[in-house]
Length: 112
Length: 113
Image 1: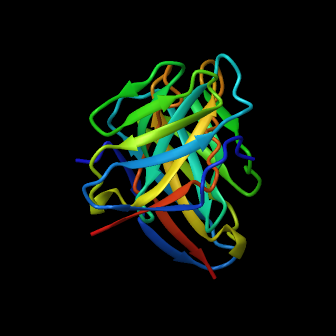
Image 2 (image 1 turned 135 degrees about the vertical axis):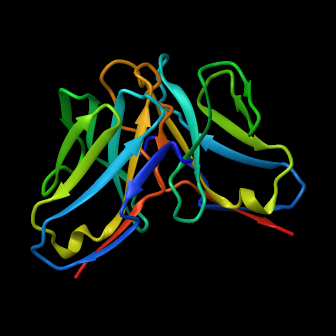
C-alpha cells in the first residue's frame, strides 16, 4: 500500500497557483519524495523529486517541510492542460529497488 | 518520436488466448518495467528488468511472463488470458541510478472477453 496521504481531489482556477499537499509521515532519512502526474489514461509523467531542500524545475516547485513529514507540489500558473491525477511517492530507489508504489493520488481539476 | 513506445495500443482478445505486449525504448536506459492499472487501484508492478540477463518478479507476476530481448525491448506475455487481466498496461524505463525517475509509455488497453 502507498505510504503517502493525499486529498482525493482539488480544484484550481486557470492561471492561479495550484498547491497540492502530501503527507509522508513515515518517510525515513534516505527516502526521497517523488511527484508524478497522469493525464487521463496516458502514461504517468515524472515531475520532480527532492530529499530535504526545496526543488524547482520547468514544470513545478517542490516544498518539503523541515521535518520532512509533508510536502507541497506547486504549479505556479495552472493551465487547463494541468488537469490530471497527481501522485506523491516516497521511497529510496537506489540499489535493486524498482517498485514505485502509486496510491490513488489527487485529481486536480483546473477550471477556466 | 516517442522515447518509449508500446504495441499494440488497444487489443481485444478471448479467454485462453496467448497475447504479447511489446515495449521499445530509445532512451538508452538499462532498466525496464511492466505495470498494470485497474480503475481505482493505481499502478501495480508486474515485472522489472535491470538488464538483458536480469528479470525480477513484481507485485503481481502470476499469469504473466516477460522477455528482455535486447536493452531496448521488453515484452510481456499472457500465456492464457483471463477476463480479470483486462486492464491498462504500461511499460516504463529508467536510468541505472535514477530508478525513481521512470519514463512511461502510452499504455496498452487490453480487454479479455
